[in-house]
Length: 67
Image 1: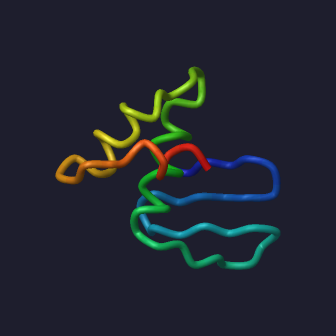
Image 2: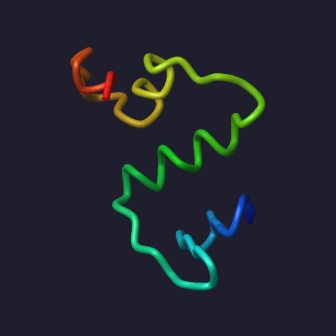
Image 3: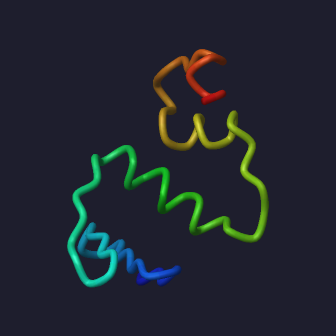
């Protein structure tokens, strides 16, 4: 799936992000977060939901999600 926002294009099939025509490297978790937020762009995602989806096996400390 392609997501186009601003001057960015995110391709979930190819795991690529382009900004202003330039390829940008993203770490896998960053890519997952961005995809999840784009998939649910119509609502605010609570940090607990995001953490459960992206880091299901980890315990996320509150201070890590407040920055």
